[in-house]
Image (tube, rainbow, N blue to C red; front, side, top):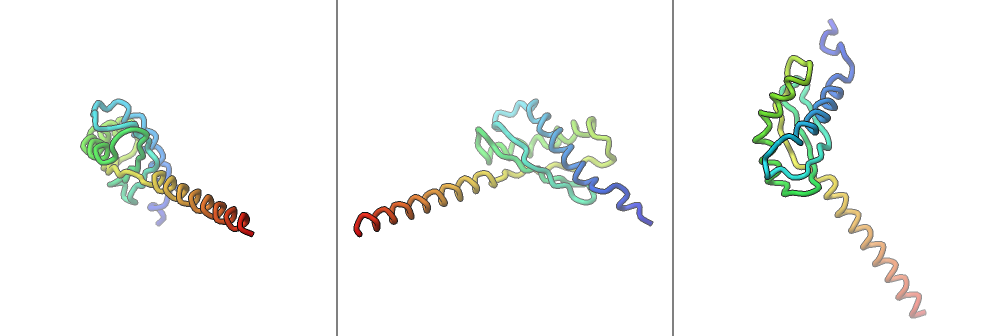
Length: 128
């Protein structure tokens, strides 16, 4: 019996569709706490009961936006019911994605290290 794995990559397709739909639905939210949100990724549990929705912000407070999005999760889930043709629409859990923030910090550290190395090389070259 292979009924469990009948459709390959189904959870990836469901996660991608949720990501697209939630990104559209968020624009209709009137909560002032929610800044300019970008949905980075969605992870769906194997039983489709829960979905972690990772977002980043162009403008706004990460903590307030996360709070506002999680309070709007029920409304967003209800709207997904109307859009998705699946038996179980997952409960949404929003998490601020710090990946871009960390990447910028690491990039700044690398640039500083390269600049310091170049400065040291210039100083050594000038004293010779």
